[in-house]
Every structure is written in C-alpha cells, then in structure tokens.
Amino acid sequence: MTAVATEARSADAGMLVTRDVGIEMPDGVVLRADVFRPKQAGRYPVLLSHGPYAKDLPFQQGFPTQWQSMITQFPEIAQGSSNRFQCFEVCDPEKWVPHGYVVVRVDSRGAARSPGRIDCFGPQETDDFYECIEWAGIQSWSNGKVGLSGVSYYAINQWLVAARKPPHLAAICPWEGAADWYRDANCHGGIPSPFIGRWYSAQVQSVQHGLGQRGPRNQETGVWISGDETLTDDELSARRADIMDEQRTHPADDTYWRERSADLAEIEVPVLSCGNWGGQGLHLRGNIEGFTNAASEHKWLELHGHAHWAVFYTDYAIDLQRRFFDRYLKGEGDWDGSQPRVQLQVRHPGEYFEQRAESMWPLASTQWQTLYLDAATTSLTADVPAPESVGYQAFGPGVRFDGAPFTELTEITGPLSATLWISNTTADTDIFLVLHLLDPDGHEVRFHGATEPRQSISQGWLRASHRELDAEKSLPYRPFHTHVNPQPIDPGEIYRLDIEIWPTCIVAPAGHRLALTVLGRDWDHGGVGTPSHLGHDLRGSGLNTHDDPITRPADVYDSTVSIHTGPQTPSQLLVPVIPQRP
Image (cartoon, rainbow, N blue to C red; front, side):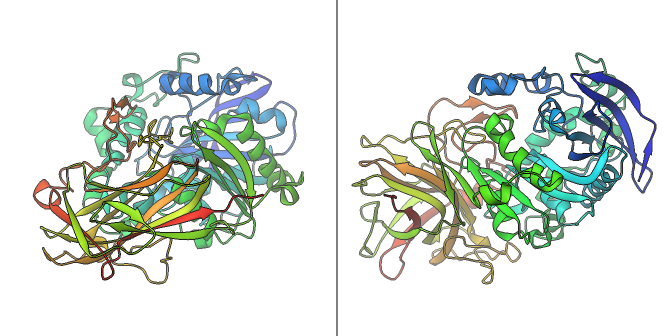
C-alpha cells in the first residue's frame, strides 16, 4: 500500500485539490484518487468513497436529466457550491471541506482512471477498499479517522468493507445501499432480475478504464475520464467480469453471492443507515437489515422518500450526516444525546412527509393485523372465509384482493408478509405481490419511488421452488428463505408459500383502502412509461424488473396458478398498523 507520484495539483474553490493520487495495492496495481482538503495545514478526518462511476465525470455531464430534475425539485443542492466537483452518488467536497474534512474519491480497480480487471463487489474490490481506507488513515493530512460516504454502489460496498474491520475505519453512512447482493437487488425471492446487465453496460462499462479517447472527456479539465490508454473491444472485454453470465450460472444463494454480500454481524463501527421508502427492489431492505443486524452498539436508522440519491445532497441530509460524522470522526457535538435511534419521514398521499422519532424497528407501537384473502369475493377480510379458490394466468393481469375502506385515518408503517396457498400447472411459478393504496373512487394513489416515479406502496416476490425457509432467521413479519435448495412443485398439489413484502410507510385517510394484487410478472401500472437512464421504460416496477426470458422461460413460468383460501388454506396478509398518537 504505497502512495506514488501525483498529478495535477491546484487550489480551487477554497480547497487544495490533488488529482490522480496513486494508491498502490499489494499486487502492484495502482488505483487513482482525487483528494480535496482544506488549504490550511493540519490533520483532518477523511470522508472516503470507492467505486466505478468515475471520479472525473461531473454529475451534470454524466447524468444531465437526473441532475436537472434533482436541482429543480431541491434548488438548495446547487446553491453554496460551484458544482464543478459534484459527481454522481458521492458527496460534494465544497460542502464538506470548509467544515474541516478531507474528501477522497477513488476510482475502483478497472474503472475510469484506475487500471485492472473490474469485478463489481467481488472480494478483490473489497480488499482494495480496505487498503484505501488504511492508506487514507496514515496520510499527513489525516487525523487517523476515516468515514465512508456515498449512495447506492458507494453505500453497498460500505457494508462489505466495514465487516472486514479496517483499523482506521471510524464510521459508515450507507445511504440507500443494499446489503445482501442476492436478496436485495438481483434475485428477489429467488427470481433473477436482468437489472444488473442493464446497469453494468450503462454505468460501469461506459467508463471502464482503457476506453481512453473512445470514452468521455471532462468538459472543464480536458482529462480523459476513462484513462489515457485506449484499448480495443476485445482487450476491454478481457478486463471485466461478465456479470450477467455469472449471475445466470448461480441461481441459488451460493459462495458467489456470499462473497458479494456483507456479514452484518461483523460490523462494529458506528452506523447511520439511511433508506428510501420507495426503494422497492433496490436498497431499502438492505438499509433496514443492515441497521437491525449490524453488531455495532452505536447504530441509527433514517428512512425518507423522494427519488433515489436526490435527498442525499439536500441540506437536511448534509446536516444529518455532518452531525453523525462530527461525533465519530471529530469527537464533537451531541449526536448521541439528540438523535433518535430511528428517524422517520412518515409518508402521506401527495408526497407530504412528517418527521417523527422512534426508538426501534419494527416500531414499538406496532399492532399486527391479519387480513385474509377471500377467493370467492376477491377481497381482504378480517375473518377467515369459506373454502374457495381463484385462478389466474401468470403472465396476465393477475387477481386483485380489495380491503374494506378505512373508517379513520390509519397509518401502516413497517415490514409486511403474506402467506399464500397455491397450486400450479407446471413444476414452478413466480409469485409477484403488489400492495396498493386506493382512494374512495377506487383509483390507485401512487408515489415517487427511488427508481419508479409512479410506484405502489410495496412489493414482494417468491419463486415457488425457493419456498424453503431458514427457521432461525425467519420472523412472522419477515420470512427468510434459504435459496440454497430449490425444490420443484408437483402440478395440481397445494403448497404453502410464505412471502416477504418489503417495508412501507403510508398514512391512509379515511375512505381509502388497501388492495393486494397477485400475479406472475412485474407489475405494470398501465399508463405511459417513463424512460430510464438504463434504456427501458419505467412502468410501475422501477429498474429491477424480472423479464429475462433465459431465467424465466414462458413454458414454465406462464402457468395457470390457483390461490386457495379458507380455514384449511388460510391465505393472508400481515399488516403493521401504527396507532394514532394523541
């Protein structure tokens, strides 16, 4: 772990900016980093990020549509900064360096200006991250305390490296970051998602080291964002993992996935885990599981709404993060005495949020309510119905079960689960669950989710052959499936499926009601889709769809499914109701 010669040093925006600092790994590969630090000499705490999205690619240049949407919704993000150093999903140094921090951004191995082979979230990448933390902790401008900051990719790898216990790591703030690479992002309920392939080509391969002059160029500095070396397509391909092929060849939760998922019980540093209610299928589960399962005595959970990554840059979020890092990197402030263990932005229809302090997750006041599915009336009822069944074609619209209108304002906040008794015409089927909020006229009330602008309030998934539960880890409100021993089903036989529905938060006005749709494909809201930066339309299920014909062949998964209800087959929905406070 050796620092090598640096390039391009300048004083900018009140900071000393040192570009392309070399950090040599034990195998000789040199990663490149940019260092932003106060002009006044001294030792400062370090905020570090390490990932593949290119430290020299400005947010506005790489993601112009997302940038414009973000600053339109939150104008404060663009204020108080020149935005020249603002990059995708990492902190703006102009809003941290003046407060006595050093900001370090590292291009991970094989990405942007760092050479090597890309293997996202693989063991080598986590080893490199560890080395970068230790490098930052012993520099002349460092006080020896390193904190980790960033969104999404830059949050996921925080969980991974924190479990390795680097000595100079003092605190982490994973903002909207999955913790279990299998369950949280890529194989929901055992159902593979081709999201990873779309993301990989659009956001990682597009800035791979070696694109050189075939790749993007920083419009202000003129630097070649993906390095000065220009390689052929074959050379580039040889220097990156085929992530989509790898995932297709690992349908069960084996060593491949465990190496890319955090051992949360090994995390002992202070944790501020910040999740998004709209992160269905991406990140939300990881933020909550990370909070509940990390071994740290000092851990906090914050849950908010709005679009993915936007809130991270707001004054609200910077104040929250700064108070946390001030406490654990500087030893300043009253974070421990003033910050609630759980801080919620409680969601109301119309994208209105109300901040509230809680002491634990699930919330201490939770009143668990069981609603039974009634196949005869396709309704959700408080009483067990008479025996009946209702069928649907898996790739069709499914069947919706409607609840009774709420007679008073009702809050639903927390994890949910469903138990379905089903039979099927083939050896396997995929169950997709969508939880809706309907207004008094029966129209769905939708929300701006993390990656889906017209989202229902929650979703859940399970491949029937992956129905085996881990008895030690399962909870009534959060079934935990092993995903290691897939068992086909016998056509015509009835099976019990326990299905995790991701946590949600909604305050439903009187006259509104819940509904649950059961189907065999991704939910489609039926309206005009919204184009995404990954090249496909968002139609209700966000970026993490499940439409890969290789892993979901129609001759197996477009089956006829029957849902059985009644005393012997009590299909049901478990809902966390929060009593209204005086």
